[in-house]
Structure formats: structure tokens, C-alpha cells
Amino acid sequence: MQVRVPTSLEMHPHLTLHRHPMCAEIIEEFQKCHVDHPIKKFFGECTDLKIKLDRCFRQEKAVKRKANFEESMKFKERLQAYKKEMAEKENES
Image (cartoon, rainbow, N blue to C red; front, side, top):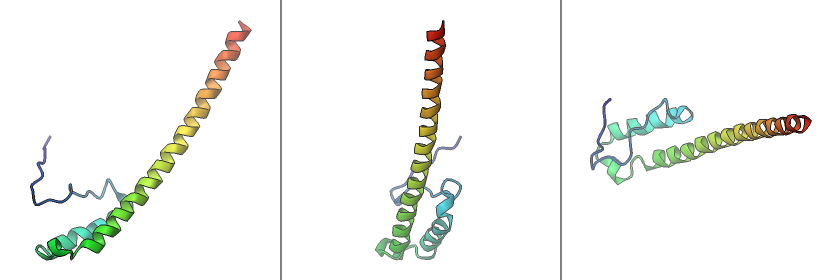
């Protein structure tokens, strides 16, 4: 296992495409901007892409949050049905 230690020049951890499939295109554009403008990136050359990337991450997180919430509600319903079934079996005994 390789551990990566961030340097003081990095503003954020590496952006991986497999972790953010919804934002892959913007990530690639942002990374290309940093490569194409090694000095200008410090003076705002890539700021618009960074803002787009942040918005995309927020949207992606909202989608995941909604899916997780829906899944938790289904689990809660199954659990309540199971508890009700167990209570009925206990009352029959």
C-alpha cells in the first residue's frame, strides 16, 4: 500500500475519475488547465473550472444522499414489518 503525502503546493487531494463519475469531464478539464497553466493557475486562470467542479461535487453528493435516504427508508419499512411479525408470533404462543 502506497501512502501519498501532500506537499504544500497542492490545494486539494488528487481528483480521481472513478470516485466521481458524474464530474469526470470537469475533472479532466480542471486537471488540463493546471497542466497548461502552471503559473497562471495561482492567479485564477482555473477558478471558473474549480467553481464548476465544486458545484458538480455538491450535485453528486445530493444524488447519493437521496439514494441513501431512500434505501434507509426501505430498510426501516422491512425492519418494522419484521418486528410486527415477531410480535404477532409471540402473541400467538
